[in-house]
Image (cartoon, rainbow, N blue to C red; front, top):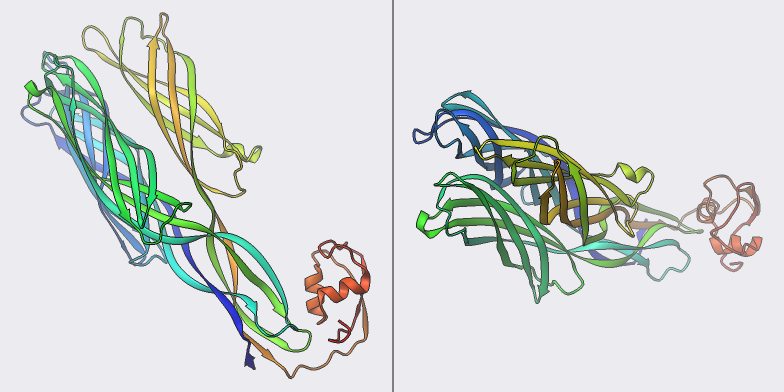
Length: 511
């Protein structure tokens, strides 16, 4: 056996080793502080998930985090009917991740699926949260692709050109942002009742060896005033930072992930009429550029026996990010709200790809709206309704992996007589789309020159289902070009089952 001279090109792939969703439950019993009145019943519970530390170890992921929890409750035997408690649900979780190793690239996202409280007695409550954790682990690998055989024209080569997303680099940065959020001058804040937080309006700008990451933390805070009124305020906090990644350039694709590491929300002194908000966010960016590669899928020689090894690698293809906006204009009917004031609306979005069976570009979803009303006696009541929507993605590649993020902007709700509510809002849609391609990489090509001669002069072959001219030529140690010329075939990519082909013994002179 002897080696064959080849030319090669390098490719850095970012292989998805693990993609997992884990559901965990976080539970805690809490004693009501002595400064708070007894609890008659809870009204609503909200929370913001913080991931203090994520540590990838061999075959597992360790997560230390907490849920910053806000409980609005109805007080017993108190003039102030509505009160609030803030607590933290710390948790530690180990998630099994087979084949994952320390040092691989990690992306973690969380979704607080539900959080609820149960009154155990007037001074004690039980809190239970259901948390979805989405984990992706990537392995970087540099591979050398054989793209041509040098100085041997007799070797037949089957090539294919592919576009893949080559990894340029991975980087991250921690961003610490602080904001003083003003409230109305007549509002002396007594307690924080509820908090919702989202990272939205994500954008990146590429400069020399750096990526500027820009986003907003949108935080909605409901609070109780000292004169027993309920009000709310919205804050938009810029999340801006640089990520150093060598060799990035315009035209690269950036896949960016945001994790809230910590958040602090605390009212300032009553006379300041403001709330202090501090947030720490970890931003991770994976940068790709689209590269066209030439792959040798198969090879053989009519004269010598050719041997090689074949390895398979998975590479990311068709990676892209896009944004869109959809207007939601709906009227909903809710019974039992006449004479009551709407003080808050929570909106949760869900989307499914069940519609892809009929239309692969269409997705069905719904907005779950949780309305909170109060009357003149500060009695709180909540009502739920769902608003369906659909969304169509143009030019979606088949079998794409999709990640949606829906954010509601400019919500406006007008309560009409008879319990009808006009719902007017914009839905900002962020989507990451990518595919995976299996690359067959040929390695260690060698040939044996002591191959016996063919023992036929002409073969008549009947084409079978699944045959290609390449496979037939390789089987009979001839060439595709020789079969095409011998049989007068106009298009070498079109042969029919049952077609009769004459395959003479190939010789270098005859070819």
